[in-house]
Image 1 (spheres, rainbow, N blue to C red):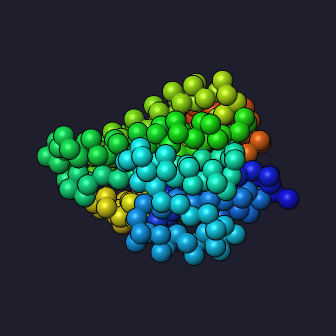
Image 2: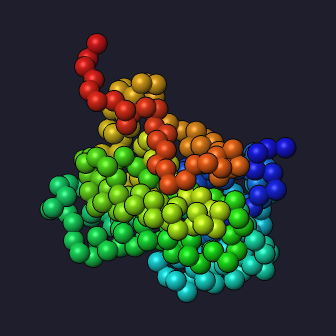
Length: 260
């Protein structure tokens, strides 16, 4: 038996086998959780269904997080299978590609700013709002952030501003849902090559640089992020809420490096 045995987890954000959300889903499955998945489009459904099957789930539901009606319809379908659930995983981020290459003020537009915040930040609150009637006490929510929320980084641009909004969301949601016995946390993961991150200019250079200066001298893995998410959503973390937990091989704690 794992430490999530008896718990049900809704995983939002699996796009393919490289997704951070898949690392989370695998870790939660290993620890005994029962899983359900959402997908954004019919094209992505083809990726998600075999992943869900491999992890023992046949609950794969459409959900466009930029549309409240789609979110409500997803929960209505989920309610036909689960009366209640314990864990919500939000691993969703998007900014138009033209917002993620070059200097911030040269790239950022009103529409790009709006879309980035809607999909990457507000969607977490939207999913949580609609989930409240189905969330069990002692439940937990977790989302995925990045260092760009608190530090300026090349090309990350408006996504960093959206992640800062997401981290503020975590604090306000933790205070609000705490009265219901539900905890809310975020993981600030080191860079990992995913479908979403591949849109950031210079990602390969970023990955190469980070692994040379982190204390652990490597990049973080999906599995490590997934294990932390599983812990945060378990009763082992019952006293932790409103936190941003860095899982980045220590990169965020390095102030300066010099060639040895």
